[in-house]
Length: 239
Image 1: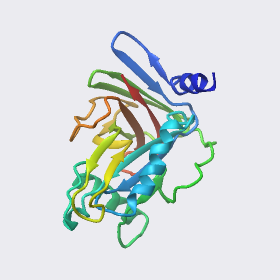
Image 2: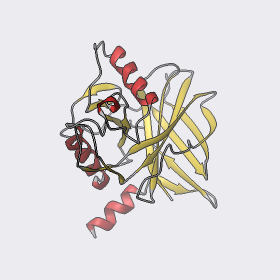
Image 3: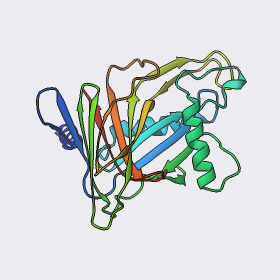
Image 4: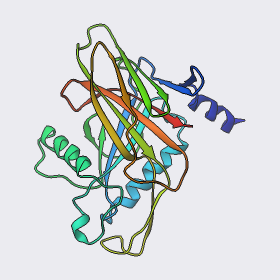
């Protein structure tokens, strides 16, 4: 009964609107965006990824925490090319490093709502109410709307990520040589667009590579136009 209640709770944000369409809608209160920067070439990353994978069983998942994992490529020079890594994700982490006034980047690294963070206890449920973010998905077509709270900004950027699960590698070189690694919440593609009048039509990004588990998820968040810190986030499982 408890497991059934948790599943129903996690699905509460997903509403079938019309045939073929699924809708994910945030609460007015902020959902925390938890970002992990990781690499298969980093020997200290597997424990951080194991912690991240545990969030699949969190009853707060998609309701007030939205986890995503970016695989960076700057450890590829050690002899193992991470198949889930992208230079774009490395550049995103570098942007955070500049924003945080750090002199370098590292893995594993976490960001919580755009701020440097160390995993452990989950953040408390947020009390801020930035507004409601709604994502409608029909195939690869995505409609995003953000209804900001009174006093919010005028222009926003929308970010939509396709997430993969049970992404698996048998690593044969580098710091994790000989290990079988399994990853969850892996960013397989990311689309960033400017919203006009709080709405935007866009396409779900194509995956850079496939994963073992057939289920995927979507994560979306809004920022002030041209900024990196998320204001509101939402996510959920795709059919």
